Length: 219
Image (cartoon, rainbow, N blue to C red):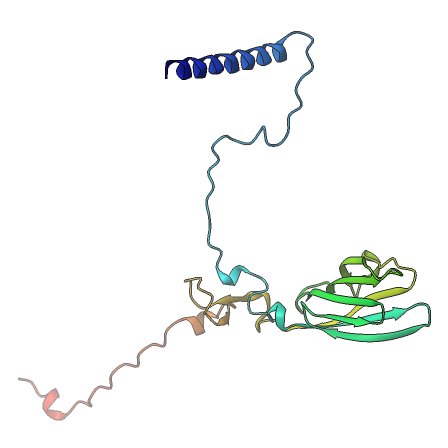
């Protein structure tokens, strides 16, 4: 037991000596500064706070779920000039000859946005001469901006034609009815009402009985 304790103490002393020597070498005149990274500036004990984002804060809340969307893609064979349409849901794939087209996701901007984009995340696999498959493309393809990402293949070309999906009614001013954030509230319009509409209706005064001769006679 004594030998183990002495051995542990000796190892700790050597480690401390090495750390001091390294620090002294870094601070020595003419020594090259140690490069710093963004991790060095990070605080040792950062305060991480988890915030529950309500469902109404998600711009896609109420839109068609990804698994239920339908995209239409175009496939062109440059060798024979034959083009065809492929209709897929996210997660599906279609094989045509020696090419496989996979759809991972499709998206389009909301109708109330200024710029409209229709995109699909497509993967293109080509069968080689030896029977193996090689991925020729993987990425987003946009209908309105085809030059943003191009399928560079000598024989096949793929592009996005449409993505069928819907958005919640009410536009960007729709907010969930309620502040519980559980996501089961229905959207409602947040447009401001006029003062006449916002004020509660005034109660009508109670009718008074007409005065009679007895009421007017002195007591």
